[in-house]
Image (cartoon, rainbow, N blue to C red; front, side, top):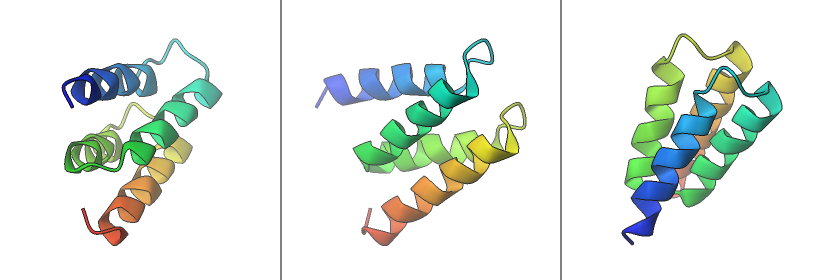
Length: 73
């Protein structure tokens, strides 16, 4: 369980790194959504609020957050 927050932090760092390709950042958002925990939900919501991300990245983050909510977390 202690590994999950570290993994989440690394994925968020990738998702917000503007030096990386959009494709890689989108993959990081997908992986955050796959974690499916309450903390992952909070991180996805912070990505949605991040105006430095592209519209596509923010839309994917809200979609993945919605999926977590629907699953009951």
